[in-house]
Structure formats: C-alpha cells, structure tokens
Length: 403
Image (tube, rainbow, N blue to C red):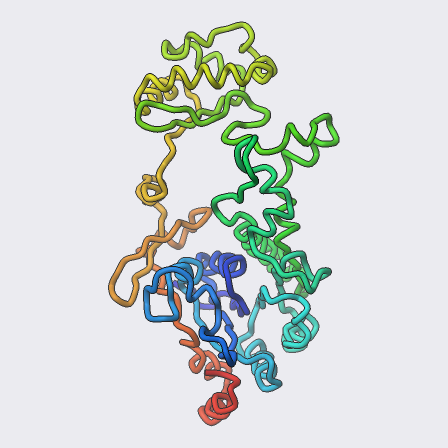
C-alpha cells in the first residue's frame, strides 16, 4: 500500500490518541514506524500497554484493542533512557530522511529521552515535530486519559439524562479529536515546509482539542443562556425542538426537526396530524411546550412499527434513523462501500472502519491493510536500513538498547 517516495513518520506512540492520528497517514500511503520501549524490569508486559487490552488475537502481544489503530505500520524497540538509544534515534532520523516525528510521551520526559524538538531537529533541520499530551507542553507533568479530559472539559456535564449522573461519551472523543488534529496540523506543516523549507513544532493537547468543540455551548453563556439550559439533556436537543429518540412498537426511532418548514411537513403526514396545534408552529413555541410535545410524539410513534414511522418521516423529508445496534454498523451500505480490513495470522478477516474521508488510491486496491506488527518485529530491518551493521545490532541488543 505504501507508495514509493512517500513521507516517513517515526512515532514514539502508545495508547490510542497518537496511534489513531498516525493511522490516518497510513491511509494516505505514508510509511509509519512506531517506536516502543524495551522491557522494563518488574513489568510483565512490553511496549505499548494497549497491546495487551482485549481478547488475544495473535499471540500475547497483539490483543483486540491494539489492532485497528496500528494496521499497516512497522514496529521497532529502542531504549531511549540509554545514550546509545538516543544516538540511534538521531541516526535513524538522518539516514531514513524522516519527515515527521511524533510522540505522546509526557512532555516532562522529552528532554531526558532526547526526543524534544531542538534535539531531534539537530539531525534534520526541516523535521516536523508533533506532541500529544494531556494539556500541552506548557503543562509537562499532567497525565491524562480520554475520560479524565471529558470530565475536565465539561463533556460529562453535557452528557446523560437531565436528572441523572454525569456520563462519558461512548466513543473516546477527545482521543480521536486529538489524533485528527495531529493529522491536520502535520499536513499543514508539510504544506508550509514546501514553501519555506522549514520544519515546525506542533503541540496538540487533549484538553485544548476537547474545548475547541464546545462551539454550541460556552459562547451561549455570554448570550443569555444559563448553565442549566446547557447541561445534560438526554437525547433531546437543547435548541431545536423536537429532536429526540421516541419509542415504537419494536424499539426506538430518532427524529430531528431543524426548522419550522420541516415541522410543517411533519404535521402534514396523517400519522402526525394531531400535532397541528398553534402552540407548536414555531421553534420557540415548541421549546416552551417541549415536555408536552415530546410526550405527544412518543404517544403517536409508540403505536407504530419503526419501519412505518420511518416511511412517514421519509415522505416528509425529515432527518431520522432507527437506533442502529453497534453489531449492525459494519453492514450499513455506505460503510461496506468504503470499509477497510486486515487479516490476522490465523486467517481471520477483521473488518476495520473506513477512513474519515474516502481516499482515492484505496479504490485501486482490495482495501486490505497489513496486520499490526508484533512487538519489535521490524527492529533489525529498520536499523539495518538506517546503516547499522550486524555487529552494531548485536552490540545494541546485548546492552538492552534494542530487543
């Protein structure tokens, strides 16, 4: 899949946020080499902790949670606590003509590991350097995970039932948003480098990425909305009424009315004509009476099969959807058309999500990406490519710099 002459990304990565970000480079046909630490005395698992999360898929070091974000990559080990490991890293950056270095190591450790921007750009002046951390390099000692960031940045105050406890979002949104920012900011830096010839330091934080998404919340506080108006609201939209999940005889259906014109089309349907009331004719009127309105819609939809409600909504051109079970999502037609896959060593085909935006060169292949690498699988091959001799590799391995 990798194209000749494609950019080279060297990434000291683990967990999800950065592996997902560099996965998007894999989708573009770039070369991504992930660096993992050598074994730590007293620790039972080696390298990326996510290797050991979920069901075992390929041996002890490739469990299910690790697979999807790491397809199509290479993996090496390197002990950056040792001077020889830090020298080897600089040598790889120079000899492999690395375009981008990424890390999601805590910023407080950047200098001691020799992975800070100034150190690495000494090996390649136009290097693009990118870090993901909890709160950015100005907060070097702050650790962080997605749900903690959701708690800190208000996401949990916005998610759940009105009278219920705070709840984290289902997908790890702040991890994935930060990975997307790595992708976007690196592409911008590559474009800038084409014009200026200079590299760039990119500082991505989970917290800043998360707060940047509060476009329809925090600004409203300065424009007349109370905090109570913005807080947890279940499946209901806070501004557009009615937007909610409603019961049917065989489940639920989600209906989203985004304008008075859509409302007029809805109540023109025989199934919903009972809702043709003067108090419901404008969005503000519907908001004032929203408890009554939600209850009345639920009474109507609960009399019908989901398919029948969907048919009426489709006739009225109203946005709607049944609540798709997660096991049915891979079978959605638009997903099947662009989904990727990988093949486990035992022959199992594993379905992968499609790229966020279809990538043209993927149309020419079978959309099968190489299975994620084992721990240290490509160490010898990559270092040999970087000019290390067999004797040097043997010496580095004997001293615990590589495994």
